[in-house]
Length: 202
Image (cartoon, rainbow, N blue to C red):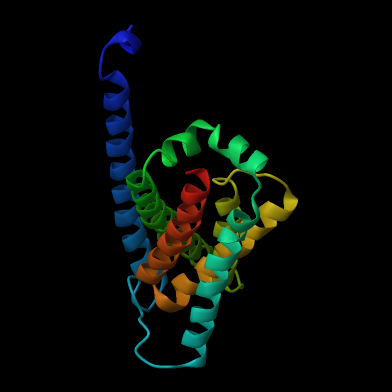
């Protein structure tokens, strides 16, 4: 019935975005609360105030994340590009550049809130509560990275492994440099890749 009503598709898109935003806010609130019970340092940003080996490592990992998440776009052929853009998600994404900006920002903020702030903090909290003698932070980063695989289209084992490694990289950045840096790197990785894809489609 509602499919024939003008503007229904637009209404459904906005309704989905509002629900999506509210869910991210819930994850953010619970993530902050869990973090305060699980970690000692600043969850938002530990910054790059000093040139240390840890910060140099974080910078190199950031560059590797951007490289590995985008290398596919530079080698994609026309047949692969046509198959990719035939999916509803990417067809909508590449309609205009504003969609790319919005999607990159939403993914950068939303995925980092859920998979880094919330999930890592949740697993650290659980591990510490049950008093298991393991490195709670490292184990939590690995678990969150494994879960990170399942929100990305699984092409093959190699791609899944690559997503897992990227998840570990984001986990390292979160633990050492905070949520803000993860969001910046995630946004940069997405916006660069989708921009290359956009101009290949055009």
